[in-house]
Image (cartoon, rainbow, N blue to C red):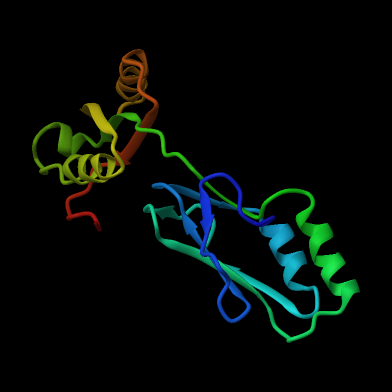
Length: 173
C-alpha cells in the first residue's frame, strides 16, 4: 500500500473498506504530517494515526485508512493517489541504542546537602529504550565545572548528553 513505508505492515485483507497499519518492529513512528493533512482534505477518504515521534512496539496499531462512501469518484481517487505518489505517509525507524552521559548541576546536590533523584530515573528511562548510561556526573553551579563535565562526558563518546538541574524534590517520572 502506498501509505506504508519501511517498518510498517498492513492488515490484509481490508475489512469493511478499512486498512489498519501496524509497526513491523519496535521503533519510532515518523509521519509525513503535511501530506497526511492534504490526503484528509480529499473528499471521501480519511486516514488517522498516532502522533508522530511516538515509540511503538512491534505489532502495535499505528493508524488506519478507509474510503468513506461505497463509491469513490475517480477524480477523488486520483487526487488521493497523487498525494501518495510522493512516498509513504508512515514509517517506523529503528531506535538507536544510545550510550548516554548524565550531567546533574547544582551546588546543593554536589555538596551532598540534597540527595540526587534524577540519575536513577534517567538511567531507568534510558535502559527502557535499550541504551545505557555510560557515566553520570554531579557538578556545582559553576560555569567551568559544568563545561568540564560536558567535555568529560563527550570525551567518553556518548551519543546523548542529558543535563538537568539538581532539585530538592522528587522529579516526575
